[in-house]
Image (spheres, rainbow, N blue to C red):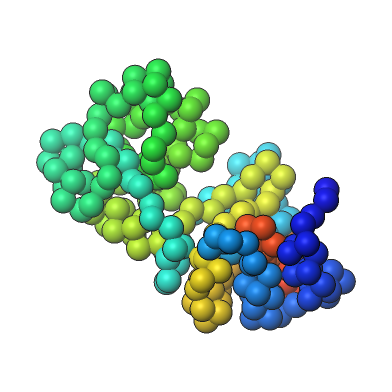
Length: 230
């Protein structure tokens, strides 16, 4: 893959053979974000889990103290009082069965997170083939299947992110924008990695965190010394 001049220049400051302390890695990733837009700073964590086994799956959510820098659009499946509660709490979209054909037939996906009350999961389940692959399916572990709609919406709007293993047993998560201060990115990074360390499945043997890389959307990856995270 051929990289542009800006990427090549930014990459010169990063030694691919070095495992950096988290603070230095974040500083380098921030400095390497030289695109014309406000790049997202991301963390990619390769684990020693085998996600094919249910007891080694990782899925959860954490509220980043400084948010993600992104405006998150929340869709809530609810009825009656809970629908009113969702509207009052600041949900962007609220509905029930009438949303199913809109999503299924019209391809409407103008939302980033889906929240549902437990009694609506039968309806939401019909959308599993669409929402599931996009990581949008509500899940109790992530706090998105709940009766406490107000808390769920407020947490998401405040910077709650979900983390989970992908098919290659890697967790990908944003920790903010390049415009954030280094201190804000460091606090978000530590909050995320602490949560993932605590989420270690008991069934995982050997090294849990195999590698951690911090990068900006368009920038080179910076390797983190995982021993500083445990």
